[in-house]
Image (cartoon, helix red, strand yellow):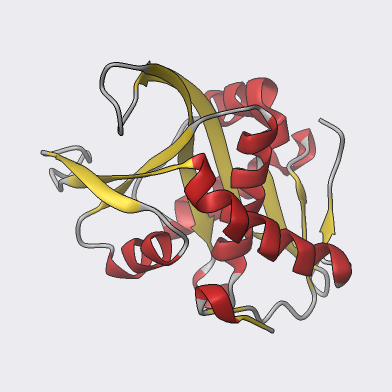
Length: 195
């Protein structure tokens, strides 16, 4: 399936998306360790899950019954990225990962769409994330869905690499999110809890 307006192709055979459950945390931690150099403690995963479970999603391969991707998010409050005179609540994409063998199928795209929709439901005004300056595929994905580079943090990562801050106004990404989620719902690819 392709969402032409966003040049997004989805190949989601046997993939289901849902909110993360408590029992999923060890599996999410496995995906994190297998895919990213930034590894967080069990406490970090649990703390974010407890506070923001409505914005914490997993992708599951229904054949192997394993978690193959996740996105966990939180809420930050601070100066707007777009109007420094305002203090706003922002959705922070804290961590997103997809196992290597499941990449280039649109799984991260769908996880981001679910995150943005959940952030919108919390009435957040902006969304942002940090990304390694060398992570060109991720940067291209985030640009494709409406985010843009708005800053750079020197030596952000433990290995000394810089990070870009990428952000968007919620109004600039919600149309993308709703288009993707409409597709997921119509094709029974998502199960959403009420929080």
